Length: 273
Ligand SMILES: NC(=O)c1ccc[n+]([C@@H]2O[C@H](COP(=O)([O-])OP(=O)(O)OC[C@H]3O[C@@H](n4cnc5c(N)ncnc54)[C@H](OP(=O)(O)O)[C@@H]3O)[C@@H](O)[C@H]2O)c1
Image (cartoon, rainbow, N blue to C red):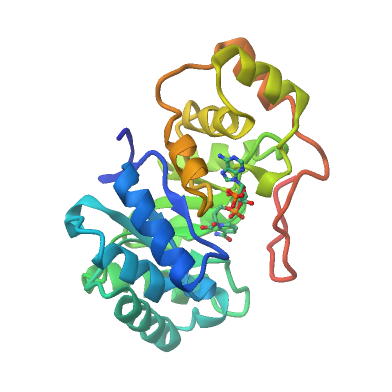
């Protein structure tokens, strides 16, 4: 497995997204993924599947230190007392004494960043997580978060795929040495059938999804595709044996669309234009 490094964190270069995977399907997907060679699992309190992810991990036979586990505290739980309670509950469900990466799952403008980022940093100092980060923070918010954080932020988990231009926030991450975790790397399936990705895929003997994942990996990002389908789990890991040319990278980057964003709930921040 390749890794992406940020402020001392060594993050496996691809992870398993688990949003929408529940109960036995989630347990099975986690165990299949770990058997296939995944070492990075992405969950969140909000997904309602931390217990299933924990069950899958516990039954996998993997050593705890060999799996990188990320969870997230939802934006409704960012006040200091709620935050601490939320992390304890997540760890209990996951059957872990600490996670590898704890993220703020959307900012909450009602809670001062000093308080939410303070609670996040405290969770790290208390040994409840090895590393900390944020999710869905646009560039200016990320700058502000970094300025109030007493511990390094190692990741910003944001939507990235060929149809969405995220250059501004990615540049902010780079400026701070913060890694980018790319969620919705397959734009939730919207890229399937894309003629450019299909043509480039044919040149490498790879699928459209594999091309999108490779495009992210070659930019030093960490995609976390979600699937419970064993064939897709295997295919999504099979993206380290080929290289996209500079021209192909550029062509894929040119696929951005003004309406490319997939995830845009009411509690979204003002996105970078
Ligand atoms: N921080 C946040 O706010 C946030 C927001 C959204 C997502 N996330 C995280 O990011 C993860 C990924 O995002 P997502 O689940 O929204 O979307 P996604 O991974 O872009 O898309 C998932 C869809 O892609 C399909 N797929 C996956 N691999 C495939 C393959 N090799 N070939 C064909 N189809 C394939 C899956 O279909 P099959 O099931 O048929 O394989 C599924 O329908 C989430 O699960 C979650 O962990 C975080």
